[in-house]
Image (tube, rainbow, N blue to C red):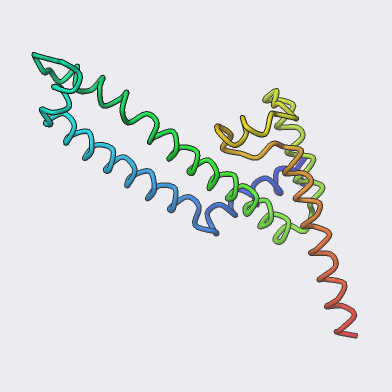
Length: 163
């Protein structure tokens, strides 16, 4: 419906207004620059090749060794970035609820998107922690409704104080 589209668009505008897009871009660029710098050090470091008994160091072997050794570090960085991404999703949901004042349209839109994308409604928490860039839809719906209730309570209190 139009209300669902407006609510979801408000969510996406929330990402822009809260600085999520530019922050994500900056983090990605810094991550890539650090990764390339560390890789350049690895490719030119003879003790690395010696430690793996490589007598004829080539760039291909260097790339393979770098990938093997950097993967655990990158996994930790990826977990941290997905945690930030999930936090940003909740923040954008709150922005949509605040600006649009129609939490149920956002909930309905998320349900439809979830159904179309065949989302897992109850993923294992460890899987969410390790890989999900967005919170599970049921968690988001719960948070949206709780925040909408808080907003209604604040609005009601302001109305009572105004009278």
